[in-house]
Image (cartoon, rainbow, N blue to C red; front, top):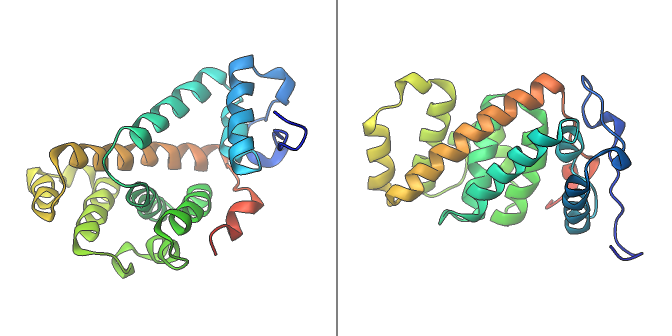
Length: 197
């Protein structure tokens, strides 16, 4: 990184129920990813500081996240909308705030994240995207009630079979992420609160 680049800072309060390691204590490949994310964002996202507590989980979590963000024909706004709708139902502070910022940025809408967090049905979105949100939230609230009809609803709304898979994958992953964020008490970076407003 250049002298002008942001320096990774693993904040002690990134999570409140487990320790956060010092930057120099984590393996070189984890430091490299921390450097990349800090350079890109201008600060070190607290989720990464928290996950650095267990480097093998840091790697797996980010690899999985990267796979479904990079290998999908859903647009990034749709991915983030699913995250926030699911996180809203799970009352996950970290993901509501951090991914709410990403919804505002990718959807270019300063209000959408708040609508999704409060009640996805109040969101000003297309019928297609509402179908996506309905199924993602149903998978969150009543996973055993999801049927083939729900997948058919997405196909009828215009999503491809691959996109239907991705909708399920994003919703399922962030149900996991929300639970870990709540369990470990991950705290959003201050920067996320004002991004995209």
